[in-house]
Image 1 (cartoon, one colour):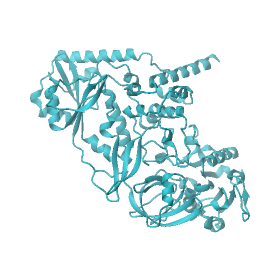
Image 2 (cartoon, rainbow over the protein chains, first blue to last red; image 1 turned 45 degrees about the vertical axis):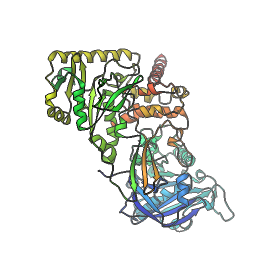
Image 3 (tube, each protein chain N blue to C red; image 1 turned 135 degrees about the horizontal axis):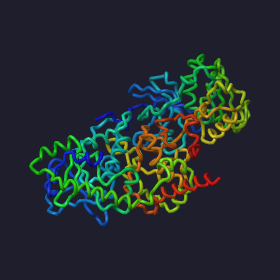
Image 4 (tube, rainbow over the protein chains, first blue to last red; image 1 turned 60 degrees about the horizontal axis):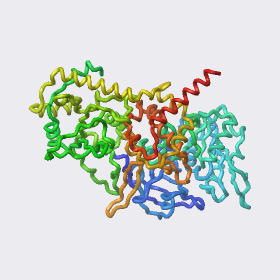
Amino acid sequence: MNQNPYKPINGEITSIIDESPTIKTFVVVPEEKFKFKTGQFVELTLPGEGEAPFTPSSSPAETKKMDITIMKAGRVTALLHQCKKGQKVGIRGPYGNGYPVEDFVGKQVYIVGGGVGLAPIRSLFLTLVDRIKDFKSVVCRFGAKTPDDFIYKNTLFDSWQKIDGVDMKLTVDEANNKWKSNVGVVTTILSANDVNIKNAVAVVCGPPIMMKFTTLKLLEFGFKPKDIYLSMEKNMSCGIGKCGHCMIGKYYVCKDGPVFTYEQIKSYRNIWD
Amino acid sequence: MRLSDKKKMETVFISKLKPFLDAVAEQMELYAPKKVGDYYVFQRYDSSLEVAVEFNNIRACTPVKEFLFPLRELAAVFPEPVEPEDIKPFAIFGLKDCDLHSIEILDKVFLEAEFEDPFYVARREKMFIISSDCFDPGESCFCNVLDGKSYADSGFDLNVAQVRDGFIIEIGSKKGKEFIEEHSQLFTEVPEALLNERDENRTQTQKQLEQNNAPLKFEAPIRDVMTETQDSDVYDQEATTCVECQACTRVCPTCHCFYLYDTKQKDYFGKMKMWDSCMRLAYAQVAGGANPRKVLGDRLRHRLMHKFAYFLDRYGLNMCVGCGRCVDAETGDIDIRTVLRKLNEELRNKKETKAAK
């Protein structure tokens, strides 16, 4: 029998962090050696209940454990949110291409993120700041519904902003009385002067509507479709380019993605739905 | 391969099918076509029965994928792994050229080097393919439009052609050759006249197919027709009668979408693999509710674009073999040939309007 790609390896949830009213980060320790590239995803199984795709939010440099940040959105994620420390899980993967970090070297990396979309972005961010001198700068523009809805608050509101070479701005749709930064959707804090577009790449991850309007804005600024990297959220199930659920045109998001340039997918219908 | 080359392929002759199939059934589980109503279905061959073996004129109404990629199977068990089910050798008699092409297509997906599907591999290795020539093509057969034929050139272990006095068996693989050699007492040499008769039959059937499908002529390669009309309203119009029964994807020998789901049993947790259909509303829906193909017309568009463009771009083959099973099974009256014809008309009109300008 060949290696079975449908068989997960065993793992355990060793701690759970409440990030926001609807989002938790699960620290998962795989029983076997497990390596991934930033932006790749895993299929996380709750034994007997179901499986769903998530991009780890931790740095790939961390090999003993990985963080998986999960928003309560459907059946499996709701069940995961009920899990306690010590819960056994299954892990398949890693799958997909991940972010082409080497192609970003020497450039400004313009990261636009929203909501739980900050999960894959955190992994990328940690990877980039690990070798920040290799990049011209890392420019982050992040949004959330309310200040409470931001995930990774401890680092996001503090240490990440102080890193040399990082330029960060945050916005919320709805402020509270403690909020001092911008109010408005994420596109309201984007400016054509944020980066030198000739030597920059953009990375976008967030809810479909935010990805759509951010992409349109970036095109308006003069970004080339090939320089806009989108993390596509589709219904990845088998993870190995067979079951068909995640197809965008000829692409299998699970195998050819989940990171696509806008150039690759712009001709297909309903990519933002 | 040209007909003249084919004669050189190793062939043997047998006057009756039963002794041949009995010999196969002695070695492995054999499935053979049986007519039920208007259609053939595969049934386990029982050599103790005295009824004459049926020689099917066209493909069975059920797809060969059932033998390689069953409707539902246990794909993984955990936490502790268990040994997968041991697949015994099996044979299928009466597969047609379109069926063999469908296996070639499934092979591309499930034998892909990076992620081989071990369950498919196990069945594929144990499968003994006895194909046979078509005669009297069905109303829905349109294989010739997709480079298919009424007889197979390759992809079989043995191929059977019916002639006046019996059957010509052609050897297509090492496995097939071994079988014939082991049972050499059953067979005789093929008289030259019968080979000519077989070739004449093949030519006639092929001609008939071409006549039947004469209205299906395209302005450009089908892939180009499809991509140039990918935003066509034809899909929405044709999909209005769809009742989402998913019969088209079930009987399709190349549709291979599946759904992976988890199950809780008394003593283990399992992962099941079950056929799925891209015509189903929730098929591409994500947990948050987003769905790129909420509209039926978009689902039909995706299904056909996958068959005639996306798969071709990826694997170099059309993902439709022109078997016409979906046409026969269709509850909602969608005829894939009509859709293709209408898209072609649209392209022609587009070109004519452009030329007129």
